[in-house]
Image 1 (cartoon, helix red, strand yellow):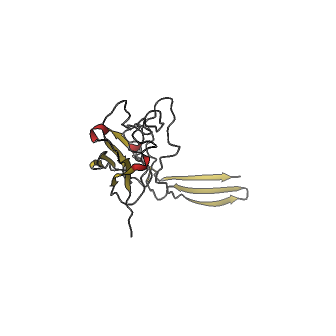
Image 2: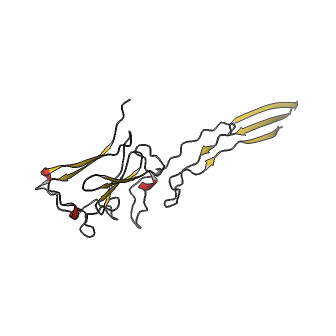
Image 3: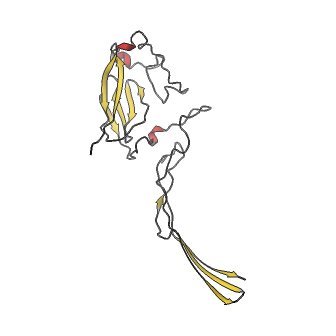
Length: 210
């Protein structure tokens, strides 16, 4: 079986500045510290090194292979102090040197992702009075399988009287299933399944019909 490997490709102009200049922070706008570039989410950078006069000179400075198996990674990287942070296809957090592409460190939080699904590290609280960038129903549980049984029998002691005995079992196999993930943003277990649901319940009833 052939395995695909997903890489992250960054393109910079041939007239790239020295690393010392590339790590400048503050009002120069060289950092991209949060999703969308800033609290306004405009995705706009004030940098002017790349413009219409030199955009044709763009060349590949370096590439990086996450080496994290098959899958797709949906992540908008952030840059702080010359370090680029992103996620691998299985949602490990990586930090790369922005000038050379060298991997500085990698964090495996123990919650493997499934393709483009987001890991808990991908969610942050939206600033007050602003809209978030994600839609509804992002957190999914593995699903629930349940088997219910019901048995009943009727007796007619008289022509006008009917007795019906019923036995019912809910979740008859007594199978415990994972509950929905914790959906409270900022909670220590956000995005994780920490409880189980389901337990067998039985009931016996006598129904009188007349």
